[in-house]
Image (cartoon, rainbow, N blue to C red; front, side, top):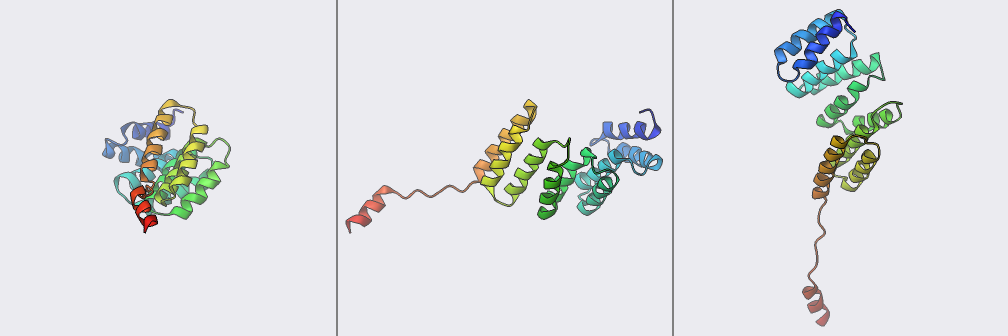
Length: 175
């Protein structure tokens, strides 16, 4: 663990997202020592997406990570998030389905992303079913609290059925 690549990677991770100049310097050093370091490439993709709003460039970094190591779990969540931001819904759906089959992947996070995908597609009832699956696969209290907030948000978006006033119905029947 004491390699120069890891030392620079730790410095970049420690400074993200507050000291971006330090992050970029450390990432560039880390990648100059090992251009295939999946953690460094993932963080570079996150910088591109979250700070520079260059989604296509971020997706390129994330795809490179997956080409290097399909089990690089650190890339799954940010990659899906960027696909959703970029409105690449089919790609996000396909990747989530794939990731759910990978042994060791965080199923709770993946089901949550599936819920958010369906929320963005305005398929609220389907989104709530994925929240339920995320809860079944969650094993930490902070995550559960977050799920409850998201569940409430989705429930708030479900269109309310218009109630017909009984007085109007009874007047129509009398005529």
